[in-house]
Amino acid sequence: MDQDAVLLALIAAGVSHCADVVVDQGNLLFSLFMTGLVGGLAHCSAMCGPFVLSQVGARLESVPASQMREWHRVAGAALLPYQFGRLTTYMGLGTVGALVAGSLGNVAGLRWISAALLGVAALFFIGYAIPRLRALLPGKASSDGTEGWWSRHIGSLARPLFAAPVGWRGYALGLLLGFIPCGLLYGALAAAASTGDPVAGAFGMGVFALGTMPTLFGVGLAGHVAGTHWRGILVRGAPVLLVLNAVVLSWMAVTLIA
Image (cartoon, rainbow, N blue to C red; front, side, top):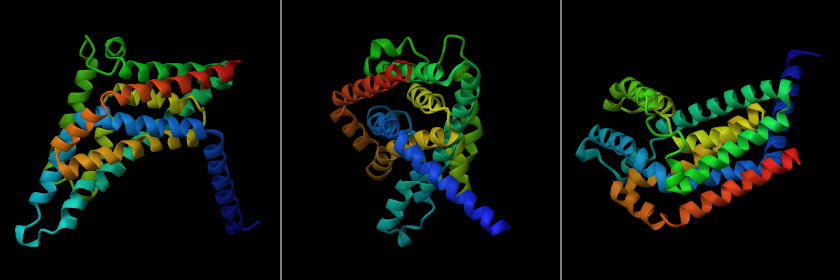
C-alpha cells in the first residue's frame, strides 16, 4: 500500500471516528453547548467582558478615524484570533482530561470514573445555579490564595498582549486567558473528560467554548451595558437551565453504572 493510500485510509478512519463521537456523545455535546450559552449570558459576560472590551478598544484605536467603517467595528467585536485562542486552550484541556480519564479507566473501570466525573460536573452546574452552594465549590480564590496566584500569574503574562491584540498576539491572548480558573469551566471539563476519548473530550470543550462566544461578541459589539442588560434578563432563567443540564448529566451518570 502506497503512502497516499495509507493517508487516505487514516483520514477516512478519523472522519468516521469523529462522526461516531457526534452520534454517541450527542446528548453530552448538546448539554455542554447549552451550558456555554447559558453560562456565557449569566457568568462569562461579567467575568470576561472587561477582557473583551479592552481588546475591542485597543483594536479600534489602531484604525484612523477617516478610515473607520462599520465592518471595523464588527470585526473588532468578533475578536476572532482571541476566540480561536480560547477555543484551542479549551479543546486542549478537554483532550488531556479525557486522556487521563481514559488511562485511569483502563485500570479501574471507565464506567465508574465517567459516572463520577459526570456527577462532579452536575455539582458544579448546580453550584452555579444556587449561589449558596457555589461557595462550597472551587472557582473563586481559595483560602490559601493558590487560585488567586494562578490568575495573577496568567494576567501578568497576558498584560503585554493587550496593547495590540491583533493577529498572533490576539491568538496568544486567547490561549493564555483560557487557563484562567472558573468553576463553570471546571464543570465542563469534568463532563468532557468523562468520555475517556480525547476526540470526544476536545469536541465537548469545543462546543462549550462556541456556546460562550455569542455573548462575548455581543458585549464587544454593543458594550458592557448591553451585556449587563442581557444578563439581567436571563438571571432567573439561567439557573433553571443549568439545573436541567445537571439533571441530564446525573441521568447519564446513573445509566452508566446501572
